[in-house]
Image 1 (spheres, rainbow, N blue to C red):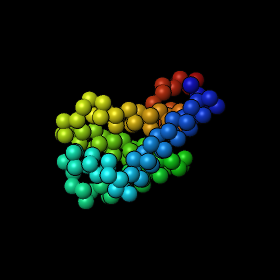
Image 2: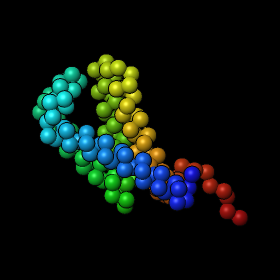
Image 3: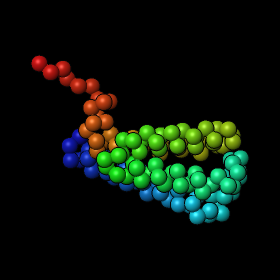
Image 4: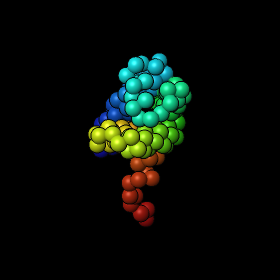
Length: 129
């Protein structure tokens, strides 16, 4: 799917990712009790929740800016990989462990559909004659 429909699908996927990730970063930054409980359950010190939330918000902002969205995708991939690793280490249920991969897929699908440079890197090109 390329063209206008692909561009809009990419924008929608990217917007969904941004809203979710901004919400997640925001609840960490504001130290919502559920986020604090999850932090303890995952074996992280409570003092880490604000820096983690701030890191997520900065990476999400970089992703949300069209000019820097590819760099943001790479940063979010690292963040989400760490989130998955922590879930594995904590022995979390399968869905909680795989969820960061799902979010990462939405992040990359959004940038793939809205950025022709990413499509050019990943999609085979016909040889020019």
